[in-house]
Length: 68
Image (cartoon, rainbow, N blue to C red; front, side):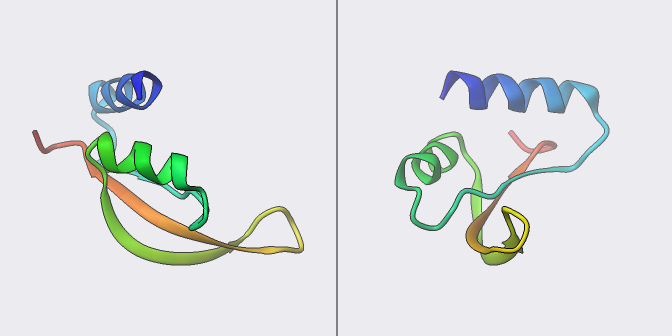
C-alpha cells in the first residue's frame, strides 16, 4: 500500500497525466485488493499479450490524478 500511495503522489506531482492505470491479473487477489484500497476505480476487464505469445486477462483499474 505504501508503494502504491507513493507512486500516485509522484505521478500526480509530475502533472503530465490525468489517469494512472494498473492491470493486475483477474486472479491476483492481493494486487486487486491494493488497487481497491488505494482508491483506484475498476473500469473492467481487458486482455493483452504478456508474456509474449500468451494472452493475459487483467482488470483495468484507473486512478484520477486530478481528483481528491
